[in-house]
Image (cartoon, rainbow, N blue to C red):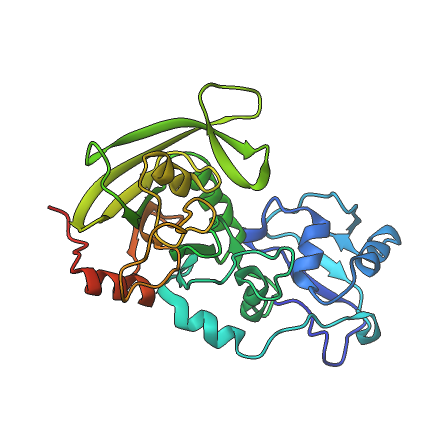
Length: 324
């Protein structure tokens, strides 16, 4: 049974059956899911005053729900609601990014320059845009991993709580295999191999990461595999796969090898080097492919076409993504 319609006439009380996907969820989180536009203070009040009951019994905010339980809900006043802002066109913009969709998840091909989450000075980002995809029960799709703002390519979004938990475990461990393309200056020596370093925030610039020679309490182990796919003049096209998932890991590792990524304003100073004609000064790092166990069984394997600026550079340089 669906949640009460806050916009229409209200019955004295409503009863909602807990879905299988919501089993184990705390009551306070479940209520926010059912009534995304109602202030949390109002939801807390109806629980504290006993107006919300689970299978006929009073409940607390921290009560864990079970599938099939009946939750009694009082009518919610429209006056208590505050509609969240939604930018026009967000749903259409997200739809245009979709390269895979099923009952558990959606895979987007994230464009250049669009942040995944909000931050200082950011007014538009994927997480905020996902408000446009809330379903009739008020459930918003969930991010389960991140890409840097200027990195393009595969971004997986969970559609249900259960799939979000499954995917988070896959990304937390090493069950998700991620493959990136990177255009770099120079040629790695050897042309393929593994990079293993200690990474931590740069003490002189907190916006950057830095390689350290040895382990300290601040450092984390960072491991990446790389392979040279093609070369043209001073440039190389690399396939890179992060074994660990540290901030800016591939960008730092590329620079550490002496082959910084084209367009990387943090780790490549191009003052004394000119970009070849026809190549834009944008980060050339693309999350091309992801493989991981699917929440519904089987294996997810999705490949994202490279962005427009990356494709232009490949065409200008005559580089091929094909593996030998």
